[in-house]
Image: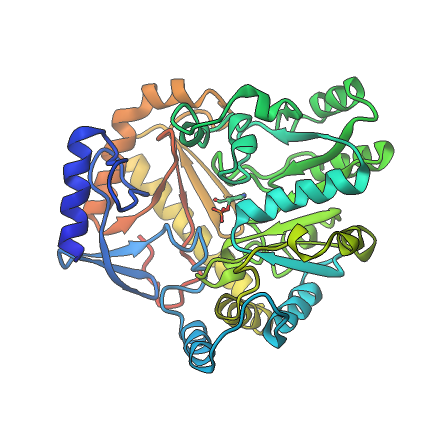
Length: 417
Ligand code: PLP
C-alpha cells in the first residue's frame, strides 16, 4: 500500500507538478516526491524505503511531545474500546474543557470543533454576532485556515492554496476583511479610524508562524489591546500554532496581554483532529440561545479526539519544565543551523521564539513572497534536499522562501543537528 501511494503520487506529478491530482497529499515536498512515512516514534520518522529522518515538521503541528506518544496512544485505545457517542455531552469533553480553562488565562468557556480553520471561523462569527458589526482586520502573512474568506486576503504563501484553483473564491468573499501590516500599529490605527463603528474584531497570530517565526515587536500586542478597548473591537488571538506550545497558557501568558477570544488547534488535539475557541462567559454566553449547531458539528468534541487532547494537555500541565527544555534545545538547534549555513556560505536570517525557529533566505520582513521565492529557489531546494540527505526533515513554506522547525521537545532527541 505504501508503495502504491508513492507510485500514484509520482504518476500524478507527471501531469501536474506537486502531484495535486494524486489521491494522497503532498505536504512537505520540495521539487519532488514527498517522504512516505511508514512509521514514526518520538523524534524519528521511518519511510517506506527504510530511511530514518529526524522530524522537524510534525511538532510544528500537533506532535509537540513526539510521535506515538504513549499516554496519548493509550488514552485513545482505551476510549475506543469503551465505545463512543456523538452529539451528546460526554464527561471527557468536560474534563478537557476544565483543564484547558485552568491552563489558559482569561477564558471561562471553551467549545471544541474539528480543526484550527473551524476554530478561527467560529471565533470570527462569534465576534460578529456579539458586536453586531461585520468587518474584520487580519494581518498580511498571518494564516487562519483554509476557509476561502481568510485565504483570499491572506497575503502569504497560503494564498496559493486558495487561488485560482479553489472554486467560488472571489474578492467578494473577503470584502469585509481588511488587511493590515504585522508589527505596524500606525497602519492598524489608520485602518480602524477609516472604518470606525464597523469593525467587529482584529484577528492575529500573536507570534506569526505562517510567514516564518515573527514575534511581536515594541509591545505590539499591548498596543492592539489598547486600540481594541478604545473602539469596542474584540481582539482574537489565533493560537492554533502557539497555544500550549510557547507556554502552557500560550501567548496571553507569555506576553501578559489578554485577548477576547482565543483559537486553538494542533497541540490541543494530541494528533487527532481538534480545534477549539474560547472566551470569557460574557462573550461565550452569546452562543447559548443560538443552539448547539451554531457552535459545533457532528464530530465536534468526539470522545476519541477528546481523549487524545486530554492526555496531551495533562502531560503539558503536569510537567511545565517541558517549556524550559524546549528553550534550551531550541537554542542548540539555532546555533547548529547557523553554523551549517555559514559553512556553506548561505546568506540567511534565523528567527526564534520559544520552540519555534524559522530560517529565511531573504530579509525576513519581505512580504513579497513570490519575488523572494524566485530569488532564492535554488538555494532553498539545495538546502532542503541537503538536509534530507543528512536525515533531517524541516518544514518548507508554501512559497519556498523559509523553513520552520520545531521538534525540540522530543526527549529522545539529544543530538539535534
Ligand atoms: N491558524 C493558524 C495560525 C495555523 O497555523 C493553522 C494551520 O496551520 C490554522 C489556523 C488552520 O488550522 P487547521 O489546519 O487545523 O485547519
